[in-house]
Length: 365
Picture 1 (cartoon, rainbow, N blue to C red):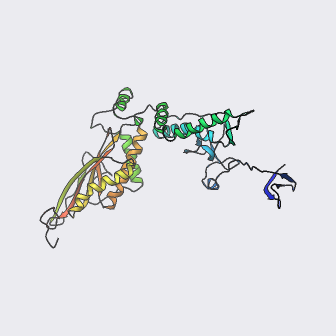
Picture 2 (picture 1 turned 180 degrees about the vertical axis):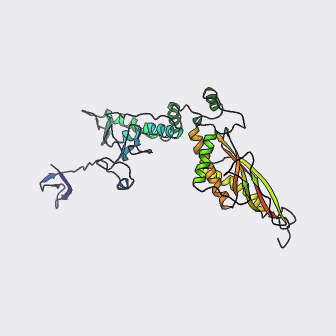
Picture 3 (picture 1 turned 90 degrees about the horizontal axis):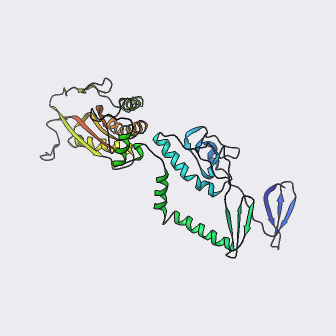
């Protein structure tokens, strides 16, 4: 029979009546209402392909079937080739392959297909240590010994996410076959580089020209790079040197400053903004108008795709700040290294008579 989802308590009795969709009724003493998981309504607004029940449809790599940049696992997802019931065991087991494929996607590596198990062991306690029910596939068992098994499984589960978490994470990471420099640090990264395609160490260990040109073209298309009339040769017509005209206004002088430091945060975009602000601040402190800047960037050893993304993000953040200050980025040097670092050589114009120095400031300044 089809259930209507409504039940009524009998007056004065301990049981009730279950009302079916066709109007039929079923008497009961106790009712345990068990339902399957339901999809969150907001999934329908994402534009992602969903299954007939409203869950995100994913392929064998846990990617959305109509957007390979979106990954989903657990109760919100439906594996197209391996449909499984909404049980916690499938969500938990999908964690490691999800983690692995997310990292492989970011590193530009081939993804690994995942096939979930078809059956699982379910153990339900009855509230008494003397009785516990277990099922797996068509097999069903009941007994006191199952309580001990359930207790051991539950305690181990809790330990995996508390006292044993660090060890579990290390074991999971050790299993991941990430063979690119982006997954390595220190001596490990250098060893990988020695065995991989030869990398150029000349010309200051520059980042490849194609990588740099892609990033700069993208920044220009987004109108992130500021320009000024004083710049005679800059990014629009790159050469061995940039050329900037001297101030034509009488009494104006040129100020020069340089700052450079390694990243201390994980977000390249935010680091780019911080580094640019730090470099510009010396000119601002002296009351100078910032005019041009040369960048020096060190990008960690990685695949070209990863390096391009990191270079774009760090320069996007820096260009946003330079633009706010009216400072034109006219060139720079980008090289490979062990860690992300960024610096700028900044030029500016200032009224020589009203420059604000660290000492000797006058009242009218």
